[in-house]
Image 1 (cartoon, rainbow, N blue to C red):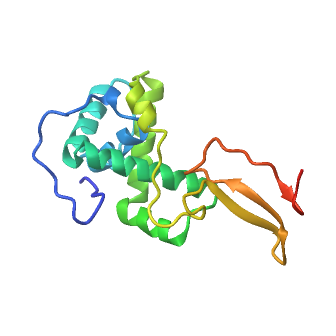
Image 2 (cartoon, one colour):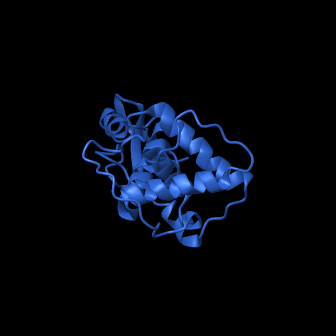
Length: 183
């Protein structure tokens, strides 16, 4: 039974996939698998590329490409923040509401990665570019600036530094500021 991304999701009638598997990023493939009829306990075995690709197409058709891209971008933003222990309670709730079955999502990510890595299924440049633009549901600790201000000493605001937000500033490096002097 496929998992639904949102309570208001309505599955569309099957039709031709508007994009090929190669036109989807790895997380887009995972989101499509999550929304497909892939069994939640599916285990990757050699020679199942066509079956997995068909499930990806099925999930993409059910969601539509716009929702697929958006859900994958939200997933990426959440994963980046969660790995850095910067996800807020609001973001945790939004993520759980979007992906209710954590085990199924984990399995979908594993299968998508297996298709990408073990079979050499390529990815278009457009898919790679989309995969580098995470979205965040709810308020981010950086406020969208790309920098999260931290204080070494909460009682002394001059002993602060900034952490690059993994979702909004994945390339930024800022020197540590100690008592107003760059270290």
